Image (tube, rainbow, N blue to C red; front, side, top):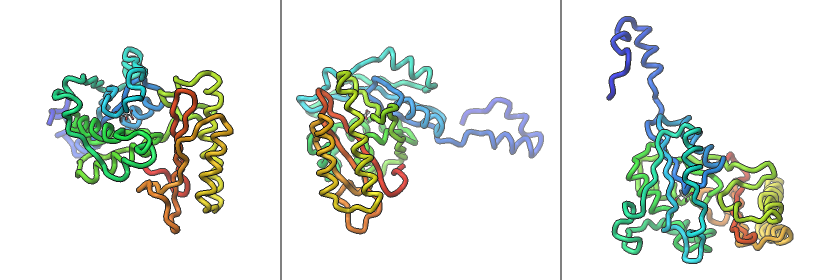
Length: 292
Ligand code: PAF
């Protein structure tokens, strides 16, 4: 334990002792914000939440090859390290960790032990991107082991990712609290994402239809409609009308991400759709406050 400046003085009166201990920082020591860089306002909100809750905010920047499929955008994923470092400096991050492949995967990617969280990793985005969540869980567990944070912060835009990681943390008894931070949106509702950069100006104008579709379905669920299949078909139709190619539109239980049971009162609407070169995802929780 580090000796605090002026500690001798606090011995003089009880009041002084109390005020000194009151001001002692009781927040968890280390918070981790794992990122793949190309930071936007959504990432900076994660850093702000981390700094509010923890004494130190460690931000990792690593475009993790393990979580990209062979035909995905690993090569073209935007890398903007200098701008990221400037943003993190302004945001007050305590430390930036930029690991290198050779240190993370010294025995090569093919020989790397991988984490597979069964069930929840294989549905929705996991069905369209086989192995994606194994790559995510593996790198996040490695970062947890390296940084040893008390808390880790993730955006709720990647709802399934957060639930996969929570399941991993629970099943492996990790002593780390995972915090979900609300999705940051542009004024027109589009969830902020590095992949929005792949949109042409015309596509960018159409992209808010994704969240608008979720909101339209959400209102009907909120009003008591329970024809899930009908709502999903409507959602796909709305996305197609907006010029998107829906990958999936689903209504699920927010904890398990399984189809909702009759008695469920809370739902998460999840969708993924292709628009030009971009695959966009978004979600909306209906029925209870968002899972934290
Ligand atoms: O959400 C992301 O940016 C990535 O999946 C993460 C959590 C940093 C792991 O590479």
